[in-house]
Length: 334
Image (cartoon, rainbow, N blue to C red):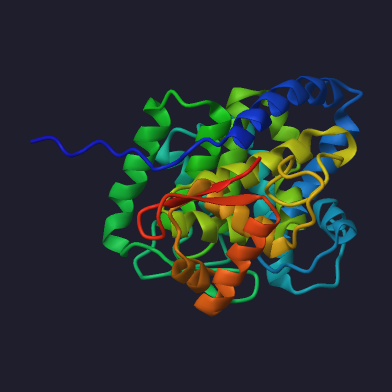
């Protein structure tokens, strides 16, 4: 009897569709910028930004100038572990163009390159229970038991190989699902982000030179929030939207992508919304069935406060209730 085929749950929003089109156009221009001898300096600069971003997200304090000095073999006064983290990331990214993002064995090799000397068992799946920690030290996700990891990873890679989804979507879904599995004892965040770049690079070579890690680091709180949102919904749609925005930023000339005006870019223009209101609208756009009690749990507020938040959005004309209180749903007005 054959086992059920694994298909990760995700939705592609209207925003994501628009971003895919924008990225596909922008990567053509970016490819020209990083090509040949003229693009050599930009590729080098972006690689340094990538390594700095990759390690900085995980708490490394080395500046871009210090990272540059480490890579040039110069003496840097800093904790040895932080220097080793930079060297590990550099070794991994040096090998990225030879990596096959559809092979589990390459994943293990990259993890060993990146984390060798930093953790015991680098290049091997974890044997203990772990959780996902956000930038404030809060546990936002408890990973599956270690005994399930090999099969979960195998299923995810099979989906990556077999799926006909757009490479941009596949890279985001893989990244999110990888973080959900959390297959290693340490180094999951940097390995997952690396793997997304590897997937994109196999699609369009220019992505190897895109400083996606650096852009994610600059939007670190949003990164963890997107993971949290997707976990609440049981669907990686919010994470897809977030990462596509960051990818667009990374390949836009001189790093100037869209203004970071929240995840609901282009929606409800002219209406003044707080960061929490924008965030809630995005959450409701992906799941209009969320109740006030569930919203209260998400934001660690009272149910009454959640109800006032919903009422305020209704008064601003950006949210409507369709159907009854019990059986209806919310719709975001665009």
